[in-house]
Image 1 (cartoon, rainbow, N blue to C red):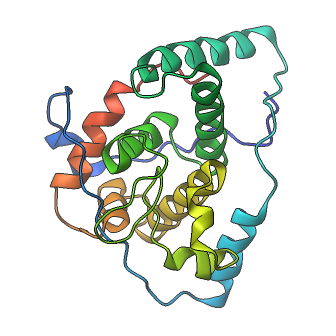
Image 2 (image 1 turned 135 degrees about the vertical axis):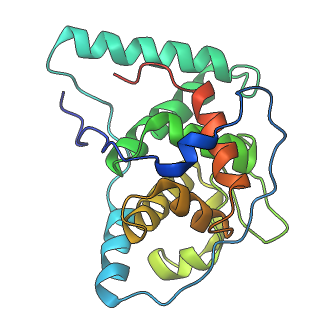
Length: 211
């Protein structure tokens, strides 16, 4: 497959996997507050470069089977998302962008969809009491650290998804692959089980073939 993105990196789920709740209807969680931390210049530059790259291209595939697998995933995910996003074009554009940005950051697509479900309930203009914005509830300070400083851009679909995926990848690297701790850091509740467990449970609802 050629899409400008490598296959997602499989990370150990650690102790969080041992405490997953049963999947089911989950209440929308109020986003926590990502904490602004000092970043080394090299890290800041790397994050900024990742965000500044071009918008998602249409995926291209080397063989028919890979393309069919992708289309099968897109159809299944679209059906599951229909009650939250009724307009077909908007729904497909959203899923295509999530697929690309997740894989680009080395994250599992169902994980990112689960995080979005918990953080914003798939609401583009969601704002938390802490001021986090958009689908992946990105804190405005990130627009200054790795963007152009305009927090309004965090309501742009592709910008928000890219920021969110880059930030989660950054936290996962900091936590040496421990997804439980990385999710806690993303939510501003590092070390507490409630938020990671909610994301893991939501992830299972989106665990369809991702090609």
